[in-house]
Structures are given as C-alpha cells and as structure tokens.
Amino acid sequence: MRIIAITLPHFFTDEASAINYLFADGKIDLLHLRKPDSPIDDCRHLLDAIAQEWLPRIVVNDHFQLCREYGLHGVHLNRRNPMPPANHRGSLSCSCHSLQEVVERKPGMDYVFLSPIYDSISKQGYRSAFTDTELRLAAAEGIIDGKVVALGGVTRERIAQLEEYGFGGAAMLGDIWK
Image (cartoon, rainbow, N blue to C red):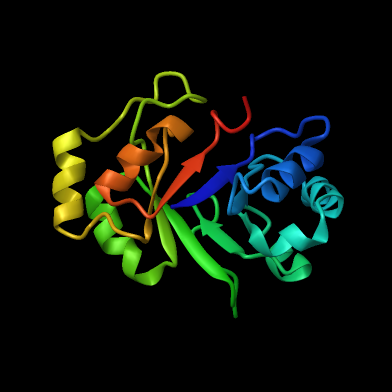
C-alpha cells in the first residue's frame, strides 16, 4: 500500500529535515506539499532544503509551476486549483468526498483521495462520511481500488483495515506529524 504524507498547512522549524527523514527511513512513498496560503517563494525555500533525491516524489497542491521547475512528481487538483497547468506531464490527482465523485473523477486521474474515511485527527469536527458497509460495497463494485487513497483519520494502525477495504494507498496528515 502506498503511504502518502500531506504537509501541515503552515511551515515549521526543521520541516525539510523531517521530510528527508520520512523518505530516507521508508515511512512514506509520496509527499503532498500543501501550503494553501503560502507565498511561492516560501515553498521554494522548503523545496530547496529537501534532498534532491526526494523531489521526484513530491506532489504540489498549489503553485503548480513548481512541478516543472523542480522536477516534482505531479500536481493535485483542488477547489483553489481545479485545472492542471497547460502541457502538464506529471502525475495528476484530486480529492473526492463522495463515492459518486470517485466514479466520475478516477478515470482521468493517476489516483484520487477519498475522505473522510475516519474522524479527522487534524480537523476538529470533521467526521467520517462512510460506514463499514458502504466501503466494503464500494470495493466489491470496483469503486474503491488501487487508484483510491484513503484520507481522514488515517493512522498506521488502520492500514490493515484500509487494505481490506481495497484502498491502494493511505494519506496521512495529523498522525504523521505527531
């Protein structure tokens, strides 16, 4: 199962060192650089401090021009940035908040996030949107498959259950930065 870390929305001391450690120790496969209110130069500063060997495993959720500039893995579409840049050649992903949205968006993406699977760790009041039965049925119908990444309340302890549901990956924000 692919493990994806999502950065905290704010920068913190020694963040690049923490990211380098997560990659070097094999704890993550990809990192989503998600700093929604940050200036592009602050994101560049962080990318400059990350070991070059990890840059091809980073996806940007904002400032899409950084993908080409740094040779990053890809871009993640969201409400702020709903369209990929012209002539984009990297990975393409997006976030989905319903099974119907997964059905509609998955064919055009390398992978999609589905959330919230569990009650969120990092967002107070962000509750699970799916029952165990709904997730198992979605897997049986092929909606949840290797292209769908679970997000929302995901912890290492829940990986086995996510594999049972048929998810191809697990995205972590709150648990990975504790």
